[in-house]
Image (cartoon, rainbow, N blue to C red; front, side):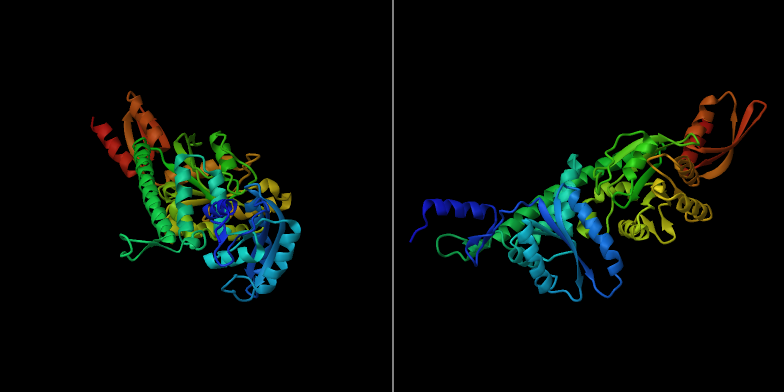
Length: 457
């Protein structure tokens, strides 16, 4: 018996959308809206993770709501052992199935890493779309990207993620015949064709991103010629980087109480209290368990962190997991090679959101930070501006330490050279003696070479 035209048309539509189960020969049920979701946060039972499970669940729900997903169910699930087929145990799967049906949930977010097989099995069990933590972060990045570079980086990360998950979209096509007539052997399967097409697209995107990297390198050379040091703001997502960036630079970058509110990097030139100028850069926020291939995809953007003269780590000091967030950010910075033990780029910490602390906690924090000059911690409030001036002074002092102090004698009539010294170095002392100005100024190696050429002329 042949398939009726209407049935055939429905079948083709199911195949085109990749929503077909070969074994059962019926479309998967996807009638429930994918914007109505449940969040499941597995945690290792008996390893002390019970204390952090609530914070992890709260963060996962925040990630989901960052792209306007209606979270109607949020649960943690202890993992005594990993079930290869579904990650979580059979009891958790069964318990959640009833709640999913009852609440009309069309999407389940598992706040962990799922294998393609686990993802497929859970979708069959729950009859709902299932994504893991990486998939959720990619969805957020895709919604936030505004520039051409940002979209390229998101697409690269998404394709790299999808390449290993082509497990059910095209299984219905079996193998296509290769060669001529009936003599050719089996050709490429559709899944292999898809992988090849994805691989070719990845190569093209990487080539485009190399162009972005070259452009950034040219811009950095220009800034170095202009003697403008770069300060990179880094931190956990929602730590207040963009709000602090706006406070320091007077810009109007999007700043909301939202995870990953800013994705594309922004740079502005600012004037420091010591009179010198620098370029400040607002970068994408980090998050715990950030997948390696996401870091790799955003390497072009994060190069601004690697090449910076100073890193300002913005921390949400009011968050109960502030120390853990600090460790997560520093782990990514080490992976990038931006900071190393006893080496790397200088780093200071801006302990943000002190306005959210009690008066007693704020006083304790100030006392602790004042006695910890080696750690270079500066309590600030990006909202009220409290402590920002001291942070700017600290930035100027650290950037000034990069140069070697030397005494320079310049005729008072040579106002251009004196002004040049104030622009390109840190003038620590000045004494006018008759017709000569004696200045003690800190200059880096490149500025010293330029000064010698000026004085020789």
